[in-house]
Image (tube, rainbow, N blue to C red):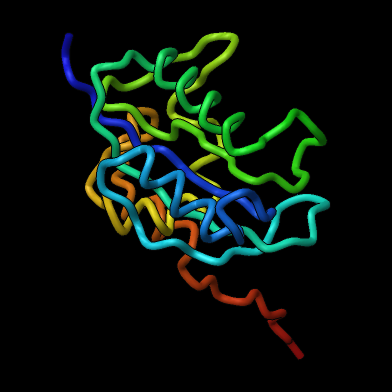
Length: 162
C-alpha cells in the first residue's frame, strides 16, 4: 500500500477530558503524529461565542482517505464529540484539508476541504507546516492562498470632484 500525506485541521473550543481547548488540540495532535503547526487562538465562526484553538497536522499514512476519515471520526467520539448544532461548541473537530493524492469527492468526503481557502484559522497554521503544498483545484501554493486571504486591502475612498 502506498503512503499518502494528509493535512488535517484540528480545532476545538470546549473543555474536555484533556483540559482546556488548547490541551484538547495538543492531545489530538499527539494521537495523529506527524508534523504539527503551532496552536493558534482564533475567533469563532457562526453563533458560537467561545474562541477556538486551531492547528494543522501533516500526517503520513497508508490509509485511503475514507479510512482516515473513519479514524478521525473515531478520535472525535473518543474525545467526547457528539452530534450537535452546526457551528456550535465542540471538544474537537478533525477535518482532512488536503491529500497528496489530489482530489476526492463523495457523499461523505470532499478533499480538498470545500472551505479551506477562505478560512484563516486553517491557512495560518497550514502555511507554517506546508507552505509549498499546491491546492489541486486552483494550482496555487498554500502560501499564496494565505497571502491572498490575509493581505491588507486598500480602503475604497470616494473621489471628490468639484
